[in-house]
Length: 112
Image 1 (cartoon, one colour):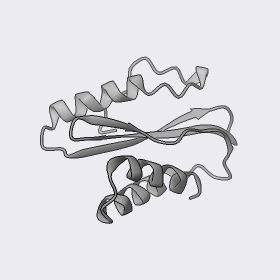
Image 2 (cartoon, one colour):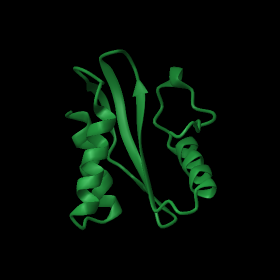
Image 3 (spheres, one colour):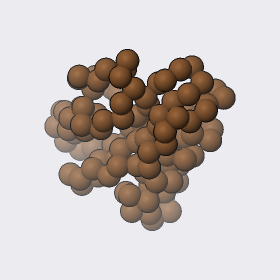
Image 4 (cartoon, one colour):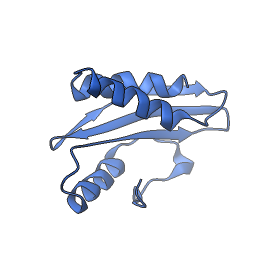
């Protein structure tokens, strides 16, 4: 995300701990104070086919955790971020609150 890294994330552990991602987002919004909303997906890669999946959203200084999907069988991981962004944008454009947006975006991404 914009060249920022989620420090302390161990891909080998396959954990969906959002703490490191939230710290990364806090650095982003500090460096870019005009940002109004940030969303990011979080994947725990178990294999090329099986992933744990979730997402977070930051809006007006507060974080919203998305639905967590464990051990998803993913046909093709290409486009998951685009699917998330589409669901996320759709939610905000249709007046959903941030929690509804991240909950709409997470399943959209896993189905793309």
